[in-house]
Length: 312
View (cartoon, rainbow, N blue to C red):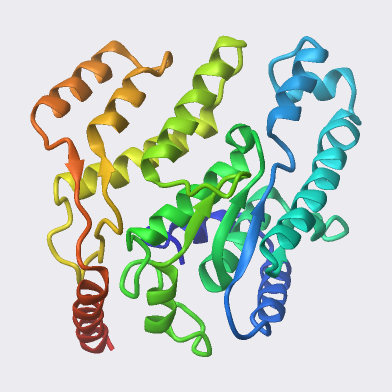
């Protein structure tokens, strides 16, 4: 699954037995029936602590850190991140009185899973079983949390749908029902305030500027911020004309011009790109308005079913 089905690339270098083990874990999670649950998005290998540790060792990259202390990643970053992640998930479950998934509890160390393999697993689980994603404080510095936020927003806007990324959904899941549920996912911060595409973009831009000012290269955060801008641009410019090709629509109003302004504020952005963004702002509407989600979704599902039947 995943937009354009690109998530399969995460397993491009994975051995068959690892892919099998991922599918076994997924089948176990699919045994959870009933209402969707909350997902506690927490940093594991990156986050605020990662950059603080790099600073403490006077280095700028993970390789430089490991050259100074080969155990620093596990002992000073991953272990405390996992502990704090579990505490956050427990507190969230108590505060909301809801079942919360703590991904930091799960580990496949003996199986030597890569970060891509973990990410593939959690993408699938978020798509199939998650109602909302809760973010820890300062999660804006976490590469993994950024990816999970972007995936949730891709789901909200319908970028992952039955003919775009869901072609190989397990028969026992229910493709069309799953799509309708995926569109309803929400994201909220540690204060239980909703995070939408506009505020997520601002959050990423702030983190990128802060880290760049400290001498780091937040490449992965920048990639996720670019994805958010691509989603917003598609809605603003009606890039996809057929819902049957890609069933996208805005589930809520957002300020496209504010997203452009926040992006222009990025210190890492080349001047020529900033000029193009300024031009876009002068030639576009400030806000993107939501549509009748229920009516549009019903019509879209009918079109998607027709397309799928033709393909079969």
